[in-house]
Every structure is written in structure tokens, then in C-alpha cells.
Picture 1 (cartoon, rainbow, N blue to C red):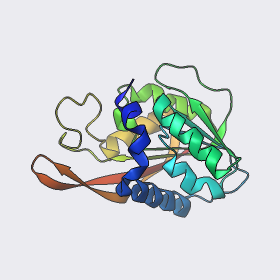
Picture 2: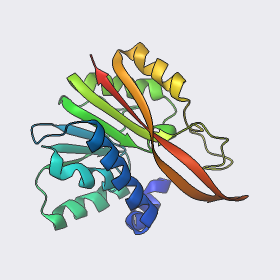
Picture 3: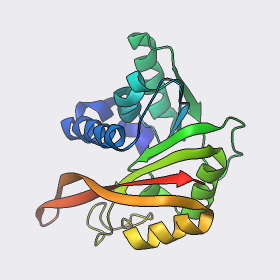
Picture 4: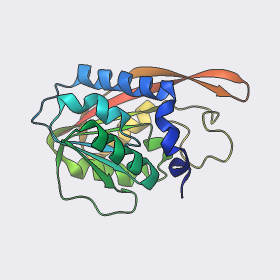
Length: 204
């Protein structure tokens, strides 16, 4: 059982998570013309907060996560809402084979900094995208490690130029960054603001 499995049932009870997902969804909708003809893929979906905010504007959405606890909560939310165009999928792109489906839009929120091997996952995104598809990554700007604290084994956020260069090397084009959210979080020294960027890129 992972840490995310343990917190899954209470995940949606934190207002800032709901606000963050809605704000990122608005930023995506402002930047990309979404339509019901688009097939979308969310990676690291958790309980689906971001996809529920985007669902009315898209066709089918595949929601992938490696946490069975998160997916269990998500499945119940989908059932209770009666939504027909969302499908959960247990998947870890750092170790699992890629799905056969291809997507017009891939998005992820606060997931990539948990992934040690970002290159493998980003390569997976490129393969999963249809030609001229969009990749949207919302995540932490590079920080001093205080967001998660000592012992965290992931990334301390991302340098925008370095991430942009990595994506360019994989074949992505028209890469652009904006600051889409300012997250307030209590750390050891008090309340600190952590900027969250939205990166949008296209598959050539």
C-alpha cells in the first residue's frame, strides 16, 4: 500500500486541491480549443478532480494512476455521477507497457515531480499522443525541497528551461509555459507560496 492509497478517501476533502484542479482546468481550456471529438488521457489522475472539471468539454477520457486506492475512489465517483465518458486505468508508465490507444490530449497535474525517471514517462506521452496532439503538464517550479521536506525521493520541482529542452529533444514543438496557480503550503518555517506552472507542448 502506498501513501496515496492511505489518503485517497479523504483526498477531495481539502478545498485547495479542488481549487487547484479547477484553476488548472480553466488554464487548459483558455489555452487549447477543447471539443467532444477529442480523446484525452490523464496521467496521475488521483480521484479525478482535474478530469471532472474538463469532462464536459471532451469526448472520452482515460484516467490512469498507479494507486489502487485513488482509483477505487474515482470509480465510485464516476458511478455516482452517472458520467459515461470516463474510464479508470491502473497504469505506471515508468514500468508498464503503453496502452494501444492514441490521444488528442494528455494532461497531468502535480504528478511528474514524483516520477524518478521522467524521460521514460515523457517518451511514453509522446508515443501516446496522436499527431498534432497536445501535452499539458502542471507542476512545481524548481524549489528548495521544502515542499515535501526531507526524505522525499522525487524532484524538487522543475526548471522551465531544462524541462523545455528535454521535451524539445523528444520531438515536442511549440512549448510554452505560464504560471497557472500559486499554492500556499505550511512548511517548517511557516506558510510559503509555491508557483505551479502549466506547460503546453504539441506533437509535431
